[in-house]
Image (cartoon, rainbow over all chains, first blue to last red):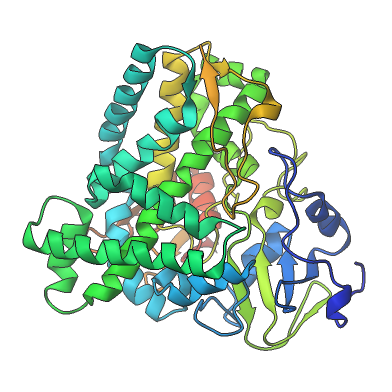
Length: 405
Length: 69
């Protein structure tokens, strides 16, 4: 790996690497961080791409305008052919450079401001309490994923955004379809376009019958005066719904399991619930659900950390690796809920950093406080080997997590 | 005694709200679009750690801390 500039495409390792450990990213990243922090790989279509495995380059490239984040570019890198199909259908600002990115994003930022999120907290607590009541009534064992991790973000999105709760199974299926690693381009494109079509119909419904929710407010302020097109809004809605469902869910499931695997850390959290904010940042760092993002394409030749990145090469900023960077996080493979892990990049970095990070944090603070207060004896109800993990997804998580108390 | 001054660049801000979460007495967000508002340009030594952390965590590098001799 040392001085490899990636000239011989076929000699480069094929990316993505298979993940085999639920608690640690592929070992190739640790080796790259030691030997060659900006490492060349080959993608499914023989495109050359570079992995950013350390925090310093993760941060610098995502602020560097010599790299583009336009999903629509023909040379934009993707982990699978299916993902290309989705990227070409994706027209929301997550896949745009400035100034278009900022133009659209600013129509939504106030909805996720710190004050708005703090004001939402009592509702998130009430929703969590209801779900925990139901788990308690029905008695152990429960599936923490189905009974809490999926339902809580879905119910919160329902209230905040304004999507009907009965539609959330459908939204989840579309989101999972988008993130799968083993699907055909046709399936992927269909799940992406289905969700946009659903959103387009939801916009019409909200226009006829506005309510006190984000979608109605955005329609009144930007769509009716003609600043934002209905099709543009449908693309953005699809992005928000997907992101609101498939990420916090995985953090709740795997985060809880990680605490089970570290009983001394879980005991600390139970003994001192004021640790929850630090614990959530550390769990975000340690778990890092998003596996292969953010991505960029080089607009010109760039020399970086000894690597010669050429115009048209792809770049993957590898959050699971940057979050285990020994220089930023001493003893990075050790979970320590008391450490200050707030520099982690689980929400990305730069102008595209997660719009909903404040919402995700509130949901996680509430869950990791209420869950162990309600069930102090909560534990895994199966062998670790029997937990089904999402090794087949671009968003890592657990499909089910049987628990008892 | 040397101090420091805080500056924000609203044109770079993406409204992540991380600065408000760190130091709500120093930073706020505009009601209309969530963009940063500086409440205190000279927050004093007691707030320095929180302000430096806010600057470090700002994903758009919209916050700077300048030494004042």
